[in-house]
Image (cartoon, rainbow, N blue to C red):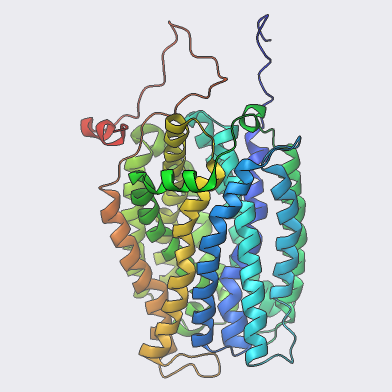
Length: 470
């Protein structure tokens, strides 16, 4: 009960109601990223060189429109909040574009197929960016204290892993056996319709459940160029952004190439990707609980560095796998490292957002997250160039022209490239520093004089100094 003369505390959003939104946002984009090469290149015969050009173009467009979408969200002022209108508009648009993406007419070939792929790939990525800029911005706003934030983040990553089981592990079974065949496209369209409907319902439910804080909508609206200039002058933006991109790009390569790794490198039907991806994701779910405890004991930064190193090592084992059993054994380590990155990466970014809000007095999470998203959008360029390189080095140009050794080609794509990226990230993470404390929100009551503050994470004596604001 509020004291006389004080405003009532805003209604809190239950962590699970926010977290479930990750389930809805993850299903569409991960089906797209996980199946686009199989669908367009291997089945429909789109040349990898054309695919690479499109990926570079849409990555550039997406990198440019992301900050604009985030900034528009920060400036939005409605009685429904800043983020909710964008979520309610973006959800049906992404669902519709995903269905169209996997509904290319059978008569299309050559330039017609290329244009269909390019238009709907760009639209899907744009609406996914709209959703994630607003959904991600809600995390520090709805849960200003790191303890609550860690719980909400752990739950949402759990929902994401459940979505990944469906959108990645189950999808090959649905598209090639339940609703279609190994060489047809009907299964992709049917699966996309089902996933689109599920994602729409979940995102709308989450958006209507979120209780945005009214105080954020009464602040001065940030100015785009001034805000961008402030962000790019922030050293933490570059160190955290570029290091995190090594992880994001590596996992983008894995998600896009896993089905063809199973087909060519392991010599198995694509449907067997269900078992490999399922084990990786199951391990990630279980390990997420353990990683969350490590974060509580040692801090997000220390845990982030450890997870980076484990993830890098895991790709070496995957390269030498010769059958489904050995691939699954290596996948256990991949799941452990990936889970650690899921548990920590967003917490590292959130600390940077907190420090920016405390320093500048403006809550511009949408723009800041979209600016971080610029680094993530590099994965479109890198995955496009990586796939194109398979044609140059191994002769893999499409499913119609796979070259002499497509198995080695996709070992390089799925294992060697991600290993190099995550090894660079693991080294760079050792030199990253972020604030250790989460600045309290302006409308929160400070603790009483005799109430102890949360202690800093336990760990080596120099760890706290590394995370302290400079």
